[in-house]
Amino acid sequence: MRRLPALGVSALLIATAALGAGCGEGGVGSGATVSVYVAAPLCKEARGALQEAGGKADDLEVQALCLPPVESRGGVDLAVAGANARRATEDSSSVAYLEAPGPAAKFSQSIVEAANVTWLKTSSGATAMRGVLKALEDRGSTSPRDAVRGPS
Image (tube, rainbow, N blue to C red; front, side, top):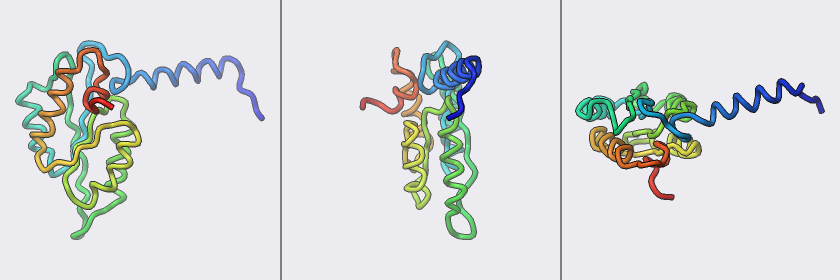
């Protein structure tokens, strides 16, 4: 078994701690930005609701990140659906993933939920975004990701 030099291990531990302190999970300072990933069919409505709220929830900046469409030649491109879901899970500021009903929903759900990001299937991007914003507004000292996920 190969051993890492002491300095290398320390740097690795510091980097790991920094990654774990993202906006979604750890403490969040005033003005921090959190992300809501939104399936293409829901994006216009979700962005509209976010704009109505001034792009904020309490002291957090909220951004809606619109995902590429998963429809292809009359079907669903599961590779795109998987890439969309993974994109949301790799972002430490991600607090929610809004998915439209359809074949891609079942596929993306397991990927997103495995990363402890709230996955919401909805036909209304506006209603879902308002719910996310309300959860963030009411979070108190709870992390944004936990607030949106709700009680365990």
